[in-house]
Amino acid sequence: MARALEAAGAELRTGVGVEALDASGDGVVVRWSGGESRCDAAVVAVPGSVARGLAGLPAPVVEWLAGTRSAATATLALVLDRPVDADYFGLSFTRKEPPGDRLAAVCVEEQKRVGLVPAGQGLLVCYPAPAVAGSLAAAPPAEVLDFLLPAVERVFPGARAHVVRAKAYRLPDGIAVFYPGYARHLARFDPGWLGRKLALAGSYLVSPTVEGAVRSGEAAAERLLRAA
Image (cartoon, rainbow, N blue to C red; front, side):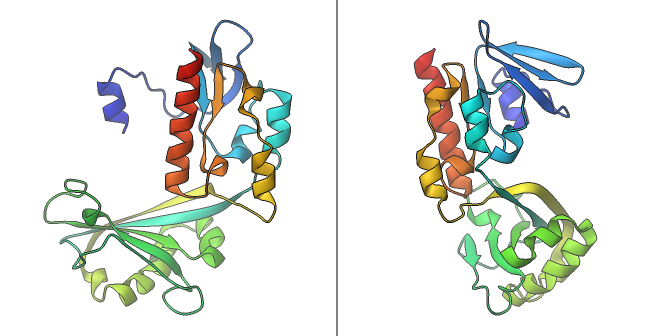
């Protein structure tokens, strides 16, 4: 994604944590420790729990963001030395019995689209069950692998022998929590609070899914472009 953005002319700054936004002038100034950047508009595309800690957001937005919640989780990616013997993209599991006591879902990435995984290889992305996701988010990567791999093997027997690389992604704010009553809270959000130069984006604004996050990003971009 970074290479594609740079090829399209975007300027990226990585490894910095944004601390404040200032939309009081002509454009938006984004500030981090030791630097800042001015832009015409800004999309705040971070979890609600992170966004509410940014200085410079309008008070009604900060107050509304206090009602958002997130939970920690982890995902495990397994690169295999051969494609997975499956003609589907993903499987989900019930929570009450193995492998669902450890694994919520597993995705066969080479089935998503051609070219996503190098030819001759396989790629599984594994999502832990909600009951264990928080503990895995705080565990060392080797423990995440040791805990989830037996569950993966129940789905794909012999997979362990074909793993050539494993990587655990631990996400402290990885899941937007839609708690009872959150739909009413969501309905109270007014994008107008942000003015014409700021927009929020995140799954907490649509649905706690990847698709929800993407849709919220599209909506944020559309809103700012209409206001330009």
